[in-house]
Length: 287
Image 1 (cartoon, rainbow, N blue to C red):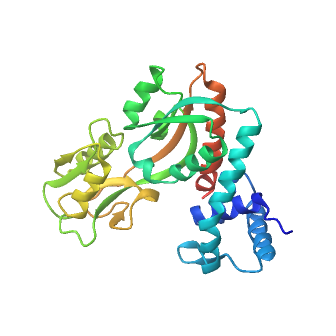
Image 2 (image 1 turned 180 degrees about the vertical axis):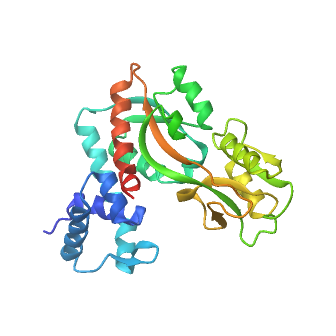
């Protein structure tokens, strides 16, 4: 009887989901070489190629797609048996704060793998602007929170940094408009003051066009070329144009994505999740 190594299968699924050997190494706390070796070993065992590199990252072959669709059933059964036969080492409930724009980045994949690895830890996600998350964290509502901070205001542990950039519709006709129509989230958005201050210093008139904590709605306004906005460079969707500054557009500051952990009664669980998040973001910090 031949048996599939479940660790190799987990590594394969993580690479397929993340689209990157580098991201997988952070998620699974393995070296990039170990990730590559495990995928290669699984391919040797099954006698077929499962992944190949493309311009967008790692993609599945036809055989890889077949294995991916069936493998989760096997892993779920393994995890269910393990849970039934052992006492949970980590169990409880945590409240995690997430800035609105980070919901669409690397974090969902990190939390997905954490939930698969620790099914007895329930995570309550609180999505809000950084300033609101700071208030809730200081009030003891959140066990841990991610934040976006400029260097002078850093209060958490830095995970990685990213450049704040201007975003507009592709081929936008608004770039020379006066006053500049500006769409940013609500007054709690940590990007608002640095952006408006930079425009004021540059002498560029501007006006508020749309304010909302609904990131999708803000991006829709910008895609329709009704306003311009700002975003962290690594998170800018392909549907929008971005630029760092230039004619009539002042340069914007660098922001740091940080993590703060409470010393409350759930601090042991919170620190465990924090370590998982830090490993997941490690490749971005290195980049």
